[in-house]
Length: 97
Image 1: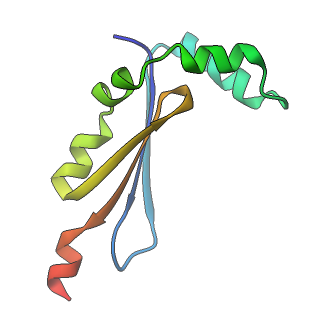
Image 2 (image 1 turned 45 degrees about the vertical axis):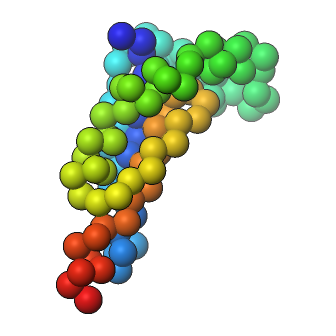
């Protein structure tokens, strides 16, 4: 399994809080990506590392997707450094109103 960084943000209707949880696999890889992300200019090395991770891997290992699907309709978008962001709208809040 490829190392990845997964962040889930749940936005519920009627509430402004965002639930975020980050899964880190392979601490060595994560520390390298963190160091690259903290560097002021985006270097070619960080860009090449981001592009080396296919989006299919990001989608397949996005653990927050199952949590989002259990609550409501969800859209999972994977971007650079394999960060999966799930934006969800709770159906239960719309039903109770």
